[in-house]
Length: 235
Image (tube, rainbow, N blue to C red; front, side, top):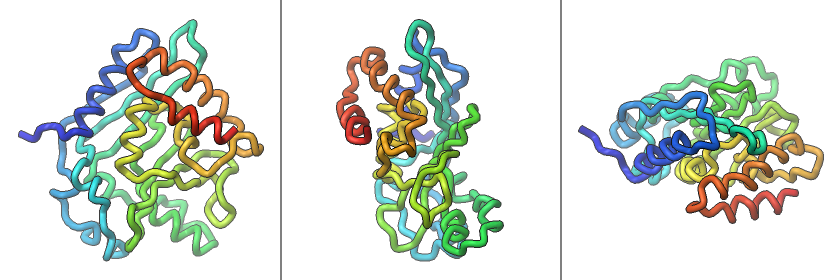
């Protein structure tokens, strides 16, 4: 029987900490059984011929999240300020088996069509209607593999489809960030090259601010300094 790796132990404990927090109402949560990790699966090019030469990050192979399901959706209880969070992490095999977003075939711009075709989901706002999705950009000869975030907003660079921004994280860094943020809505913007005060992204700043003002009191043994610094740098 497989045992949890270090990252999996941390995530199981984090889910339990959220469930146990009396100030948070958990709408839904689940931790599934362990499945195969990236090191137990065929090479990526066996799933997609365009992935020939693609090298998975060493930390992805060494510390994958193998749960058949790992998800949670929560919100604050009164009298706390209103904010919420959620995440849903697919196992390694599901990431590699995903097909491109069907919308990519309808794009006339070749670069944007190719870009969307390279994305594979590693997280999503699975119960709310926010439409947040985080993806790996599966491009050969790129290390580490890029992580991109999609939101239903007019953000990002002009050559990319609207709503997509690259995050200053790799796969492992993203999964580590989830442990601290608890998946509060909008946390990904703290790792994007985006200024909240620029007119783009201002819609999310209040929720992010509320989360970073409140979470330290709910989880006093965790250090939110870096996230607070990132927020200030984007105001």
